[in-house]
Length: 113
Length: 398
Image (cartoon, rainbow over all chains, first blue to last red; front, side, top):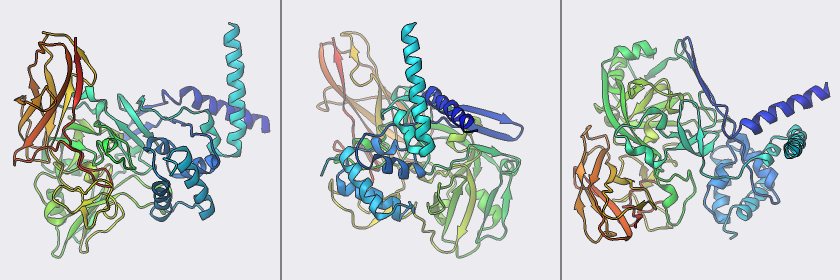
């Protein structure tokens, strides 16, 4: 049972790894139904304390590629961004974790100030 | 062969580790993933576009693809705000609800929508944040270069005809528009946009069910989207599902505080400063872009190297485009191509045969039908909207 579970995860992951970048990208029309299948595109985040918290919380709502796409922002700008996610979008991030995430972002993707 | 074996083993080990990590939580999958770069990707019903983000999808059109007067559907940029986007729509079930302060509620099927008079015109669709990555100082948000725009021939029913069929009652102040996309959490504000009543009743606003004579692609808003020609695409709500006529001004997150510009003549403020009063973003600024030659291209002396590009405005057409080959010291009037109307972009061409070798800085500057033009310095606002600077482009002649 456990083995089957691991095997299927490996199969799924292999699928993601192998096809993720070219993308399983399909569109089809069946009767009155028009459908597409979006590709899964995982991204890497820089190492550093708080990385997994940032990746975990941010990925609840959006791809983590939103982070490295940004220009180097100041700590105040990253704080404003994380605060917007919590206040405007209701991201369920406890204050302590929000502080960790802001520090991570300011260090790994910021001006360091 | 041996190499292949090793890499396969390493691959399996990596996947195995990732599987173990994935079992403990999602983020670990990212450890296997690539770093961020602007690379070409293929999404459903799309050609090769530049990836900004994948969830929700934001895809930018490479500049060379703007050589077409009308942008093919597969080359039209993609911009969604919320990650729960419609990936499957059943036209047998889809209905466009029209209601609020109206005589009656409508539930229009696609067939019903197609019974209204069909209107067709070509209009530039452009993201409010197109060019945001050029702002100085830089601002957060989608880091578009100049490819969040397209010129498309849209067909659909007039919004005004649909509203009249529902019967707008006295005391209505604005109309709000919602689509099938949703936030991933219930706390995420739904993307709802509004137009004041007078604007909503303008003749040229349509509910489009065709782009370039075909059904909309799902990523561009199948089965129907709002077209507000001349205005930035934030109002062009995709996969439209609800239209509501309101007696009180609609005030949602995406109208305020999002998508606002400083309430100044230029929509700009001194770089790095904070705006006072703001207003909802609206009409597009006048723009022009040189498409060919491309940045950094090497050209041959005494050979024709026509300078070609596109120019458009916020619904006032283009009066003229001037082009410089010497960094803005002297200018020549470019030839304008076929005119597809005031909402379309127009192609411009300046025949050029550089006689001397060296580096050249090319520039184009458009003026719209009411005399508005483009600045030589980037105008700044904190959200990174309205970018329309005259862009210098460098080429080398050998």
